[in-house]
Image (cartoon, rainbow, N blue to C red):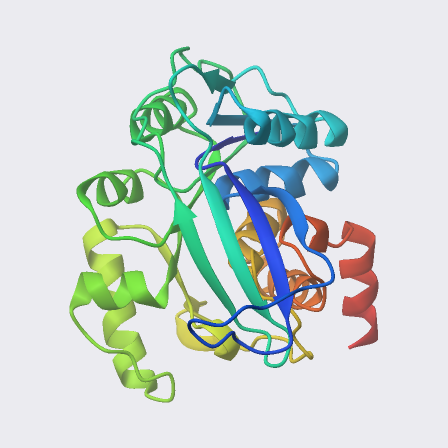
Length: 298
């Protein structure tokens, strides 16, 4: 199995704090964590770490942060032929306040102009595709060139590019914000009828498999004709940064490896749960063995 991931790369700086800082005060942390980030990029890192040969298609700037992101992928062994270092482009950066008291995170991202297409055509063949809506013209090219691949989109924002890509993939794993914005309905996670109505509206429009992530509640989808919530795994969270990206990467792996939809979602929930007990998005990715061992215990 080979994977291609097309999407956003950012450089994350995480500041762990015992509580959220008060405005107009000075605060000090003992350490900070730096690593690469971004939805499809974190997914690519997980896939390669778990042994699936992966090509990352993304853009970084010709700067220190870009070099650090490239080094991340070199160290894990990913194919970086389409990880482009662009002149006159700065690497997108995210600054994350991780509230260690309750596991929440607050993110501020500095983002350069959107790059719709990589300078190189990506004509490689693959079995699995993960995209996040960034570099949409390259994402379309990869999908069109691999019509039989198992394709997944991490859908977080409703816009024309994302909607167009959603119509081409086999699995839309969307945030509850995406589902709410698209349907103009406010979700109540305890209202199965409303969740079902929203799911049907998405499925009717996009004509593909829909999974709606519901944060700590789990994920909502239809399996064997039955609408259901697949619960999340309850843990003591330290830092939720990147947990969604890690869920999407794990889902892409498990569904690509032939697991059932239920098992793919459940094991991805385990993967994300383990990650939030650690600090730093990419550093928090567990090994595949850890996930499968955890599954045997619960």
